[in-house]
Every structure is written in C-alpha cells, then in structure tokens.
Image (cartoon, rainbow, N blue to C red):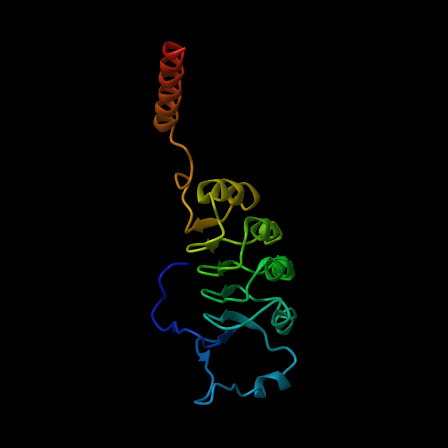
Length: 184
C-alpha cells in the first residue's frame, strides 16, 4: 500500500472505518468500542476498513460480507489472517481495489491464489510474509492471476537464481566433475 494520505489515520490494533461518500474515519471510543448507531440505516456502506494488528479471522470477516462497496481493506500485522480468510475475500471481487496483507504470518502461497477472484484489485501489499519461500516466484504467480494489480513486497529478483549465478554453479559442477575424474 502507498504511504498513508493526509487525514488517513494509521494505528495499530485499532479498527477504523470510513463510509462511502464520507471523509471522516469512524474511531472507537476510549474503551475501544464503536457506536453502532450507523447500523440503523440499512443502506450504510463502508468503503474503507483498517484492521491493522487486530485479531480478525475468517469468522469475523462475516461482519463485512454485505459491504459490496468495500474498496480498501488494510490488515497489516493481523496474526489470525490466514488462507481461509483470503478464500473468503471473493465476496469483494467486484469492489475491492486495495488490499494490505503485510506481516500476516499465517498466509501461504496457496492462500494468495484465492485472490484471483478479486478482479478489480489494483494494489496488493504482501511484504513481510514469512511463509513465502520464493517471493520472486510468488510475484510471477500474482502477476499472472492479477494482471492489473501492482504488487508490493515481493520483487521478481527475490529468491530466483540469477542467470550468472546459475552459469557459475554449472561451471563449478563441471570443474568438480573433472577433478573427480582425475582422482579416479
């Protein structure tokens, strides 16, 4: 995700939400609770949700599935976000434009493939995902399944064998093979 814009709060462990057509972010009170007065209006649509560092999981995601105008979902550092959670995001396939999954330690490559249903996704942050062994290959995969999406946090070169390195490895293998023959 790009750096936060002016007026967009960035907090850790606090749920924030912004409604469609509004510039103000809804914040919890001093006890961490929200006023749910907005729920009395059935047409209320949330456009952005920041759940940074919260314990949201695939069960908690059920509270958002009716939000068909959700464009931005920020989940950095959420320890319970996993592959099941990602599989459930398909409900936002026609609205979600930005998704931040950075530092969600339970996400694997298998879970990332479920993002193929997010047809309108323009930005995806997968930085700091410890279970991604070969970020370069993951980047290629995501580029294939999300061709209009800018992926950050994994670069093409990460985890790939460079052509020069591969030639050096082959040269080293040949040299050791020839050396081995001389010892016979």
